[in-house]
Length: 213
Image 1 (cartoon, rainbow, N blue to C red):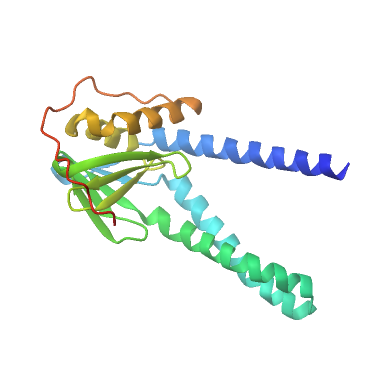
Image 2: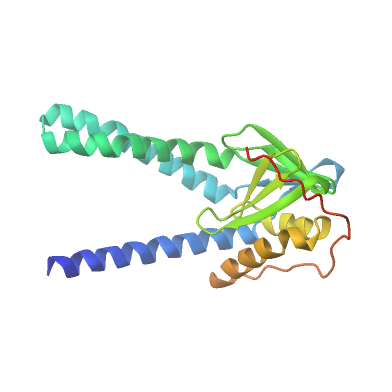
């Protein structure tokens, strides 16, 4: 009976988490990015996601602080063990929830870049991109340029489809084809359609191996 209850709880948690992620993806895909100077688009997290992230950061941070306080007040050894495991994890998640929504990327004709959550300012020119990969767990595109600079474009950013269009238009297909295919398949699994351009530039690809940063 206990095993059945645990399995049901796990299944419900997984289903709810999946439904939330699909809903967030729909919000991001339908949100309109802000157009700034020079015709560039400002890619940011949609407002509902930023508000939700702030609430999560408060809840996670509060719980991370509350665990050792409760353990100290109750002098409970089991709570102390929970604190040693839970507080660092919850604290890290709270920091992530607070910093990630601050990401702002400008996407234009020459390249993409801006403020990232943890790596400061990052900029990549389309002409310099030599590697594009897609992460299903992270839900982002990862660009690497000739100098080894890495820029991740989150699929939760408003304007993400526009960034994908730019990658497909400005970067040779041999570089992005596999990654964008995986990205499109992932979005289709969530009931979302990603439109891709029919043509891409014909330029020589620098095969020099990028230095991983």
